[in-house]
Image (cartoon, rainbow, N blue to C red; front, top):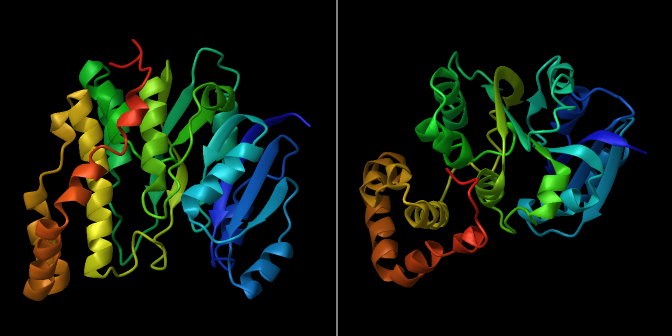
Length: 296
């Protein structure tokens, strides 16, 4: 069967949230929906088996991480276009009607759009990816193109041509945390034409059980810090120092979240694990191999 879109959704122990995502995807014969379960508990797997959607393909995996699950879904994708989604989010009403207007554009590798955010206590979190898109739309140019290519590090605001992904061996990082950053960097570096629209087509759910929002230990905070150093190393190699995040900025953040004791523990790790920090900054440099004139 020929698919227009392949939607890949990693899943882990959130079968109560996934139905909302599936309900937001039209039950059309040209939409392939691949749910890759990353070794969920048995009752969640049983719940997944009862889900119904015309285009649903359920892939049951042993527990690795979200990046591994995304790659397994990407490997099975057959659509002309690929989009990554999360089990606790959903597409906005009419999203695929908007995508349909652009799917036949042959001269683009990526369609980038805005996302909405679930309101919590009357407030909505600001999304850096949206800020990048809106700045580019307001004033397209070399400087703002850097924002959409290298500052918009989420996968959910990008419809990407699958043939482009395959030709460039693009994949997600096989890790639990921020596995989508490497994918976004590869797309940004190698894409030819990126078409940008203002429409909000996806909604980010503020589920407190998600990896990025659950309460973190100091060890876990340091793991997120190392993930940021991977980005810093990539930015430095490209000469994008305006995107570099200074280590000093972590001090007030850790102090606010964990107090003085937590800050001292974080600083102890920072001093003792210098080799890890240095290695992290080299982690994404392989992405730069074979870059060409498409890089702004």
